[in-house]
Length: 539
Image 1 (cartoon, rainbow, N blue to C red):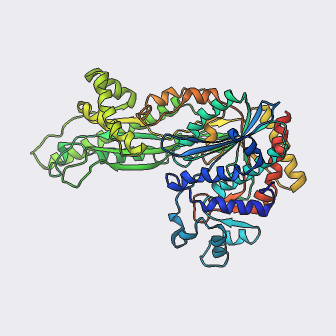
Image 2: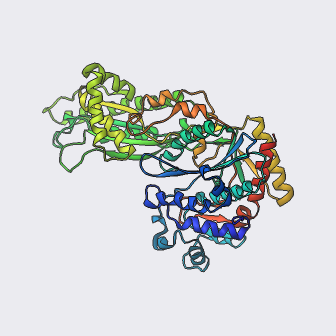
Image 3: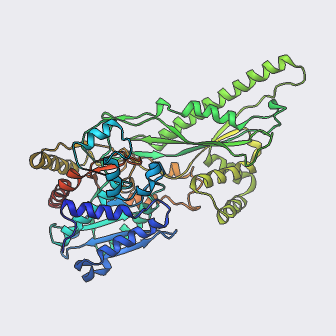
């Protein structure tokens, strides 16, 4: 019996899914796929085919879920991809206790128990909206996929449907990276041909007040470069006896924060410039010794640039910062020396290097066995998260080679998202044209194609990359690779397929006003998605 077909049924399902507060890294993130598994195992189809409904463990105890509805005479398979983790709820303030209670929170907001911005008040007067963490990003997408799975069980499609829902998309995409192995196994054991991956991520507004409704033929790329600055410690009473790492990092910030040279434009779509996501010195306690080391990390988004091109721009920024630091130091030292004959400014040149070069230098001096021994010792006692542990691995090598000081080292931390696109794929373009026509004829709805989904997505690991960039150029500068994190470049290359984002309409993901527009998302989109799946199997 179908349970998730009407608008009201989908609203009830969404409220049930949202109430499980599956914040990334929480116990509820572990429980969520078990709950979905329990819902699906009640279906007659999966009682007949229990091996088609599976939970797959990650190394840390979390799980992803696959549910396959298979036709015995077909190999063509469409993957319905979603993630079930959500960001935290602290931003809801005094309404945090209602953040995952969809109906209660919506009632509170509609009854003026909180002062909503005027533009939101105007919006919700013109449609049916549900508020709550995960309503938009992205449990509504999963709810619609479950609806499609029911239709597949009812023999609505001329091919196989594979529902895939994963954890950890909001942090490192560990769930999707594990899913690559699962997809490869299913492809082999069930003799599947992956024809298309449809991602249920929601529509993202392009600007405040945007009322456009979009579908996406790809997904934006992201790297997270880090810069480890190593100066020379000194007493604050002798500031020119060393080089403060905080001074070094401040000049890096000037060269990278909002740096326009990283902005990329492709067919009218534009990336935002880099912004710092971390900037701090690494002193563990207060003292009057100047900080000897500091680290900063930057969010860098891209569309068609290669890793090599990004590396070149980052290297140039390091070089500019290094030369400016030297000039700043010498200028200030000379001015101070002019007032006192007690010291002579020291001369130094700041080195800039990639992690790959630092590693090679350490191996040359101490041997690979000793370098690996020291790093593996850190791995076995690790307590830090991926970003902090990446920094720690770099710090260990720099400490071994402190004769390099002063130095700035460029390295990469997870997550990494390749930019992918199916815009040039005739199959996808025909599919998009059919969806747009159907939306306009049946529902008077305009659906606009955008090439790159702007919110980062797990499609990056399964779509076709926009450039032939060698991921190895990134991996060689990623200290964490094979030390608690693995970017499976070969698997990613072997599972490439067309991708299309067709998802619900909402607003304000990751904000306390996160909300889903119900009439389109649960009234029109399910039928549009069914039409899209039918068309995708026919062509």
